[in-house]
Length: 185
Image 1 (tube, rainbow, N blue to C red):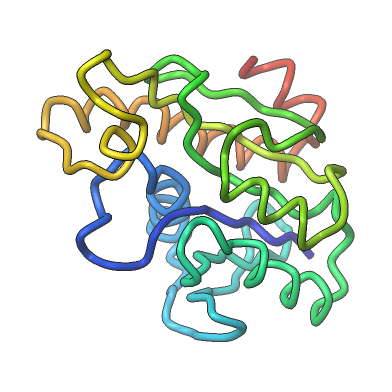
Image 2: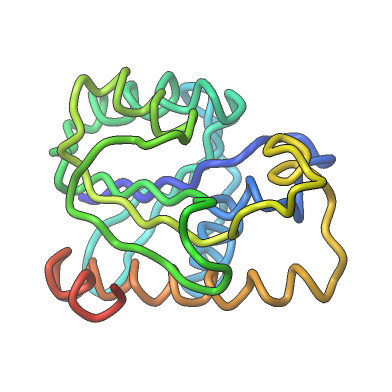
């Protein structure tokens, strides 16, 4: 069993923002594989199904970004999911818009959602996909940049990274993290 987690903020005001790339990836996967995201457990909205012959749980924590780990940890414990089968997907300012970075493990960097996951899981030994959102122009501060509403044209540029993250997630399930890293990095 795999736990595929997209990080984001739950309220409508945060939809279509850079900080919700993880939610957007999970939404695309759910749509593509007709997995209903209608169940609630451990402060998360989730759905389960089969993707490429693998049983998966798709999860969107509802704890707000900075407490994402508080939702993920109970899922890992309850379903006894090994950390190498927990894929966490989130936005990253250090990755170019439209690009992704796939990693087998590693530190959270400056991302508070990833920091929460590492803190709650007591480990950096889980795979992740970082969806590029680019860096803010000087006039923006980082918070306004990541949670500010986007124009359709700007969002369309980000969708390239979302699509790549969906494809990388499927490749991870089919062929493993090393294959996904080699193909998308």
